[in-house]
Length: 245
Image (cartoon, rainbow, N blue to C red; front, side, top):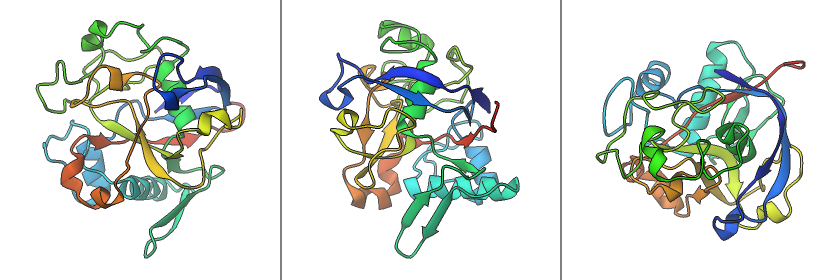
């Protein structure tokens, strides 16, 4: 994992979609984030199965539902003796996150964008040119319609790989198109209900969808059960940093 030291940044984009506006200053605390997207090897070792369509131990795990990624976080926490972040009534599929817990969870939307930007303010962490994305991520223009082993493209300035492309990454927040207009300025965690959000773009998507501020959400809850529809969906984990880090 990489320690992402807390700070402030301008979230959103004036040139992006309507749900990326208004741009607003957000402050997040320090946290640790996985250097890579969770691999199939790591997922299968902990969960005991691999839902991915394209198999490969160093490929990102895909076809993962949001609740399965939360379960993975809890299993990872238990393995390391950390307090789980997610409590749930699995019969009702209710998952609530404790941000004070020491264990693993999905990043908030603000944490994800802050980490992806890594101190930059351009469309991508490497600048504003879509042509340069080929050197930094896997998207429809260079992926040959498949995922690729994690960490093969350049890392962003804070040492994180595949933040642009390869697979979409689940975040913890629910989606609200107008949330940015009412978002808290410090450690926003999203609305209490809505559709689940993902960030980062994938091997199937355009360069525009891979921008740091681009927001995508799952608007069909029934599709969440049909994993075959989500061969482009994975995740990475975060956990809270200790005071003083």
